[in-house]
Image: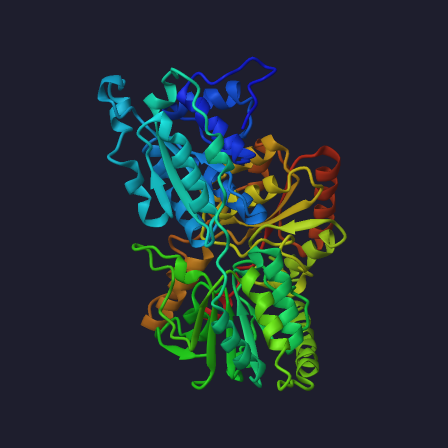
Length: 587
């Protein structure tokens, strides 16, 4: 808790108690777009708290929550996102939903006009009060609360923090009455007990279930490991690699986090052959196992299994503890032979030891054969990446290669988007520190990327954001926040001047229906007029260049941008124009 000795400050208002809680639970930052409903808390943060947690000023509440999302992906710890009553909460609901989908702890702190109607200002406090505000997000937060007294602030916050951070993690929403924030205290309110309270421990597996799984895995001839979120914990990342190496088992990384180094010879991500030949699949912290094990025809909506019908399925993770009664983000139900509820960071070491103890298990030559096959696959990828090398506009593989050549000798971090898997295929991503997980939906990446950069603030790393154009157009004001914080970001535009993912959908529909494919661009094209992202970034204080269509010009532009980041300590944007990836095949 914040000390009141030395500077003469002591608790005076209800909002001061909230600041003591934020500091006591170790929150470093509070992202916000200013709002009158929490003016009391804002004043307490600045004057009582000495701007600690540090206020991160944002131009939109959606950006504030997304920044907290990106910060949590890197650190595993929550930061606060403070949102205005009703309208601010409604602005940020989509970002809260994606924090739920991505399993990250975010503390969304809101406010309401005074519940005591006698204290409300005319009009504004009435339209900014709802019964109750948590209803707007209750279906996709782990918990929400609106404490009715200052005395309950401590217990409410402590419970919210515990629930948000207990795996599977997720966002919580706590709403503070504006009247309670501004009420003067009759006496100090101690929250020391709440701050000192023990945090929950992780979930360990049923020992007998682990023994059964170990026996099945040890005696499988062609086991495959499929992982999605295990890499959120450094121990699980290392243990999964050790298990794969011991077994000589290929790993399919579903990229919720980095689960296996991209150049590891047992990383078979993207290869369906190993699944088609598998006699056992070990699923580790997978959110939607049905999606991983089944292939969908996007035109007919028919599915086909990627694994043989007699393949044994073992699911190890904590997805059974995470659900929403509203959103069906868990995917289609996938029957398995053995389901083990456990935190992989605890269960994987125990499982590996049990497998090693099975003296009757033998796997001669399995790893060597797989590594030889992996080398062939990587050679094919390298060859394919050189196709259309000099085309203008450039292809994603060329851009991924140019960025890699520019940053590979730096201490870099990739934020989210991977240029249609080409960064994943071509870069040496050897640790979750290098990449905290795949990109999410449109209007999420720029905010999450700034959150990733904020988490690495001051550690000397170069933050690389391969930034889609449509995503940035949702929240261009986020560029101001990055410049204001002087974050060392290299933003390389993945600019195809279109909402091209949806363009492809329209092309598929036109192909199936026999309608005019030439009209598929209507409502999708962003080239008339083409946004000038370099000029936009410059207006917010960034160094910028572009647009660049000729791939031969990219390398020098990247070099200049990195020099500016290092010498001037400000972010840089390079606007590169990239080919619309599969337009030709629909013509």
